[in-house]
Amino acid sequence: MGAIMIFITIWSLAMSDNYCTMQCRRDVLRNFEAGKTHMNEMKALVASGNVDKFFKGPKLIIIGAQKAATTDLSNQLQARGVLGRAPYPNNVFVKETHFLDYCMGVKCMMNSQIFETNQSSVWCDGNQYLGLFENCKSKTKMCADVSPSYMMYPEMAALVRVLFSQSNSTLSSVSFVAVLREPISRAISSYFQYRHLIDSLGYTLPDEHQSFEQAIQSDVQILKHCAQTTSDLVLRYQNCIWPQFLEKASSIEFKRKEGNAGDSDMKCRTSLTLLQGFLIRGVYVGQLHSWLRHFPRKVTVISHDLYTTSPEMAIKKVVVEGLGLDWSQYSAAPKKIHSSKSKNSKTPTDFSLSNAARSYLTKLFNPYNQALYEMLKENLILDFPEFQTYSS
Image (cartoon, rainbow, N blue to C red; front, side, top):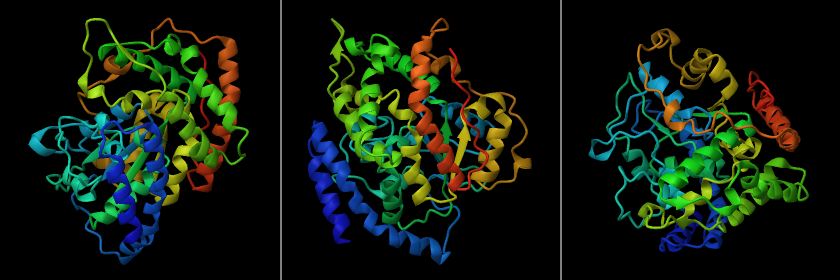
């Protein structure tokens, strides 16, 4: 346990200040590799076969991607009776816990409804996470953590394994889902949601983000620079794209509107940092790699194109292949379902991306998309279709 205790000590020291600098956070993220030394313990637990199918904790973790219909998917699963709304502390029901964002140092993304402000001195405790789901013991409805920010962190998959190892639980009964959307359309949708959020929180839009094409310039520069570092696209994301993104995004200045005190929850600023990366979030090959490596055959990958054109097929894939359930019990379409489209669809109907920008971005993403398709095939995910070409 020496290595992990050293890492926890490092993390605790780093997180003792709510205003930890970006350099501080980057150093901590790099040190997270120390947690991988305990992966053998997890292998032994899983291999033992001593599995309690209904241990407390989420049975499903939807890791991403942001703006890829993850909210609608979770609503569908709840309406069909697959998922229950887990009773968190104080009987508060939420979809996104963002607990693991907190573990990564992004304190201001925590859901304030379920977390007290005076957190434990322990940087991130597995039992604390699973304790959120302690009342979820139904054998007919599962509990889920739907936090689509999880996928973008290079170290997150290793963190999940360490957390479950801490709690003496196994990963045998936990499934992961990633919904992947064509990167350009995802970026556009994300940008306009970002604009809406900045305004609603009482901030003025930074000069660098006045238009979509302005807002992606930083990401374009990062992708161009990192393309010269290595031909290994996974390592490129982990060692260059991600740290460069954190550095550049953290330098953006957010000013409160005149006469508006702003949202006190945003004083940490890291959530405003992570809401950027409009193109970076679409480099899926670098993000999914660690999840597929740490959890082979446990990650169900869904095409957003499939979900929008044939939602029944996509939902069935999650229920049958992802969760191992009998589709006949959940195939009936719900009579009524909460729709999130009006809330989350912020892209103006008259928005149009220039032909030059569309062509450039298509070429920019092509190698990453092709590498993604190959990686999925290597992991026996053979039915993921290539993204439909974006057209505005």
